[in-house]
Amino acid sequence: VIGSDHAPHLKIDKDKKYPLSPSGMPGVQTLVPIMLDHVNKKKLTIEQFVRLVSENPAKIFNIKNKGFIKKGYEADLTIVDMDKIVKIDNDKIESKCKWSPFHGVEVKGFPVITIVNGEIKMKNGEIIINGNAGNYLGNKMKNGKIIVNGSTSDYAGCSLRGGEIIIKKNTGDYLGSSQQGNKVGMSGGILLV
Image (cartoon, rainbow, N blue to C red):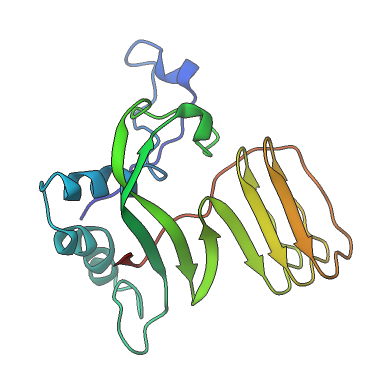
């Protein structure tokens, strides 16, 4: 199993001398790109990667209908572009800590689409919410777009520091926010494009 150890401590806290500095580091946003880069460098196969981050956790934690691309299983998928080259940059880290130990590292292989329960939730860095997003909270990004299709009654927390919010159809009681937070995470199987 490979885990992200996502501990989004602020850099100012991490820079303190031990034992005053907290343990852990941010990793949820960089786990997939770093590991895809290892696949491209032949350090492991794509099949091994899928087993380590998807299949084995579903088995170990007995998560029903997850972790595999099988009939009857939930369609939680991460579609990746194995040829996409991206330089990890602190300015693009969506976590509250705003830094990564991989800042400046160039990776080959990057997630381009996230599908949760059969619906596209992220495409090329844009968060997408389909249908009624009533009382939906927490989609906050520093960069990119949040696209909402359908009713957005009482929609809150949809804010960006750069980019745009696109809302289609009924907006109801739209509430804005200027906070920053985390992107939708990646889960499930991996398809190569």
